[in-house]
Image 1 (cartoon, helix red, strand yellow):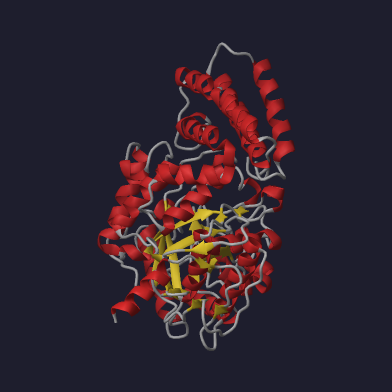
Image 2 (spheres, one colour):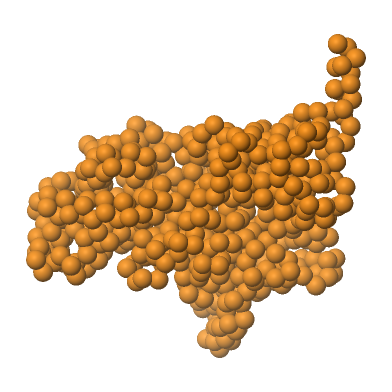
Length: 582
């Protein structure tokens, strides 16, 4: 027995070559398991130049075990057992996470989607070595947040191609919910049905949940269809019934609610791929002033009453469907009387928050209001794990300016995890992804593991992404984080002339840092994008200074605006500036 144990111990310590190892799947593998094995084989061949077959085999191999469930925190383990690498997922999508974790162990990194504007830099790093080996391997991971979402939202620059690229990256970054509007603002452009046929199989084989809906009450009770025959179904403003899409319909009207639910039921039956449905009021909602609607209570109470009816009526036909509502705008505060039922989940949406400090620090009146509301919701109104934070990181109001806040992302993720919050959600516009790459990357990392050390993460990211230029780039990111959120006039900030002069002066060092990075690394697409973003931020800071300082001329402003226009024209197709929202 002692000899056998010594032999096993010796075998486990001996390096195990990975190149060409067969990949063994469970019997009757599902689509995600088959895709995971194909991904593993594809990347191992890219790393080693040697193909790996997917087949049953004796001897050394990589074994993908069957996941017992589709529900849970997406945990997985990687272990070396004698001459075999064993991947054990707890959920279907965790099968894929285990594969990518093994590839990360071999040196792969997934920084961003492989959008075309990255060119040869791509969004990933794949090492090339003919003889990679694994000595010991014993890794266990699980998600800090069950819901890790990317929102298409307004969808100004999304296409079928770049959405597929983003979905591919989402799985590698361990994000598990893809959200798309039914029809954003009813314009027919950003619409789930436009992409459904091509995206659904891409999402489902990766185990990514499909969330559809958005600000969409009028999708199921459109005024152009119903108003003439049923004006009493619609909201009232100043004594008149309104066709306006942002006016909430009369939720006290039983016939209107019944028709809404009937139309929603038909939509869901025609779209069985939907896992989570967003049942949100219109954006910039104005709530009906009709006496019978006002009698139901404030907007939050009305919202809850209506959602209770929707959830109750849909539950028999869609027992596994999650219905999501939002705490937002005039209905951000929790209700006093009505409670959400068990099949409702919530996005908490602090749209006007300040990003000069973490939300939980409550340093501004608005942040304090939002955080108090969040604590109210999770303090007995709804289970914390049913709440996702709609973070507004990379929001449109940032106007493609490099608001890079990795330490705030890390700090907030830890607080939300400790509160038991269920998830993180962020925007996903491709047009400015390169500007916000660090934020996208950090949100994904911290949604998966809120315990990571941000300084170590930054050091690892800059080393892997920028190579020889890592040190000056890390200093550049630190400077951007310290200055830009306070100096470019994003919502929640005020520009003080004296402080603004100091910010402009301090930010001049950014150019020198990127020059140093180029001297170390040579020509670089990634450094070019950082420098374009730097010039755009510097221009914006100087414009703000001209606007608040009385001793500077309008000629200075005109010159800066001409420079701004040139930058926008140059960078609007390079992943730096989204020209649709400036």
